[in-house]
Length: 191
Image 1 (cartoon, rainbow, N blue to C red):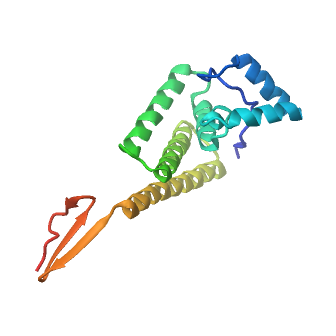
Image 2: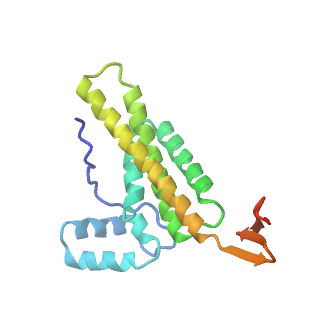
């Protein structure tokens, strides 16, 4: 079975805007902290106090997992890598909608990650000219599990959105009017 354990790479910061220190100096501080320097770690903690910095330092584990999967799939082809990253951004925007809540943003990331993982597995499986029966069974099992996680992520997002929709029900003289999210649903008035 393929080794799928992620390889840990050292953190680096790439061109943070609005910082008063050069990137090379920040990266040197990170390296010192990674080697156990307590003073450098304290400095990193101060840097992390800035909003959004944790993402720059690799703290967004979900995005890091997606990034590693993109790197695995694209290999050394920068055009494929950029195409996948663009598709993921389009998918995020499409699934997020205009004003996603913080919880919806987390679930959208899960939908995007599971979409990528499922399709990555399918592409790898489809790219095999031949394989042993155990390896074929492994891929089929992996694809089925990835499909279940993908559907679960979609259902989770749909459930959160459903719970967030304010519903108003008014009963007036045997006529019922149901209003969800400010719209009157078709056929919602009954006798």
